[in-house]
Amino acid sequence: MALIALGVTGGIGAYKAVEVARGLQKRGHDVVAVMTHSATKFVGAVTFEAITRRRVITDQFETGANSDIEHIALASTIDLLIVAPATANVIGKLANGIADDFLSTLYTATRAPVLLAPAMNTNMFAHEAVRKNLDTLAARGVRFVEPGEGYLACGWIGKGRLAEPDEIVAAADVILRPASPLRGQKVLVTAGPTYEDFDPVRFIGNRSSGKMGYAVAAEAVRRGANVTLISGPTSLEPPAAREVVQVRTAAEMHRAVMSRAGQMDVVIMAAAVADYAPQRAPQKVQKGADTLTLVLHKTPDILGDLGHRRLSSAKGPVLVGFAAETENLLARAAEKRAKKHVDLIIANDVARSDAGFDVDTNAVIVIGPDGSEPLPLQSKARIASDILDRVERVLAAHGSRTDQGTSQVRG
Image 1 (tube, one colour):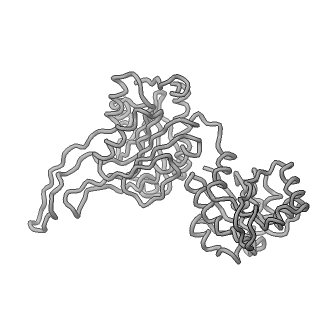
Image 2 (image 1 turned 120 degrees about the horizontal axis):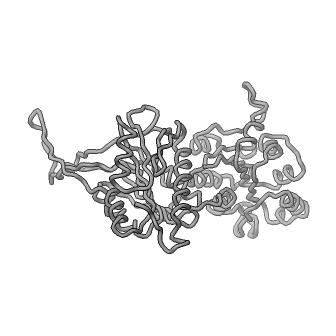
């Protein structure tokens, strides 16, 4: 996950910057919006605040401790600066070192890569002064997303319309994408809970929000993998995966995973799949006696079936499982890894209030063939990145389908 500063300047294309922010978030990035005074005439700061869940920076001289050096603090932490739309005015400022607002000052202070998406009237874009400024910035290593052609807000037809949000997000992704062993690999991630109905109204479920699995999927997308996300019920917006499959029950998730796993290089089972499910009653069970007895039947063991399939064929994807426990965490997770023949188990203490289910942070223990490694409490996005670092090591040790035609994976 990268931290991206999204500069928004005063042009009619500013409304598209909202979708740029959303697209970046879908790829797992954290976005902080920096708006010029003119930009706020087109889009309200509260819109970006709602999307990014961060304070929007609009004034270089806001009151408060250290507010006068906030641009320096942000400049040293961002991974990329995007300006979309980039007007002729701000392009001129950046090219000539004029730093009279937060955005232009941030540009002069940061050493992060810079991506500009110009947007202006056709004649302005073709003007010698603007072209010279663009050439100056290009010579410094600034990258651009060329404006589109068509009807402009001024009524003219020509080149100058802000590029579509997907184009801008894709260009940012190219800049940020690491040279990852996961690039081009097929990765399947499961996420969220399963709901097991016992009548048309009620179900048995768990508190999984899907945040951990979605963070893993988003990070795999960022590393260039072709991601399939199989998700139980959740309110989360899915990342830009190649395929997103929505399921409800453990049986549905089992079918979705098993039908796709044979084509995958990596399978990461982050979903909290129900171990038992009741027989679904055809009609609502009426309230009557003081107690109600439900007979539960064991659900399909998805991770176990994947492990045994690989064991029997000596081929298959790298397998990563999660072990959600409330006691004896390390011992039970290690036992699960051995029993189900998987490469890595992510041990998760879900009894903690600051980790596990339905929170934004997590602390886990990664258990592999060489022992266990704790990952301290941090955001789930960071945990996802750390997990995939270790998945890449397994891929490097075992080879990939791309190099060998099929993964050679140890049981």
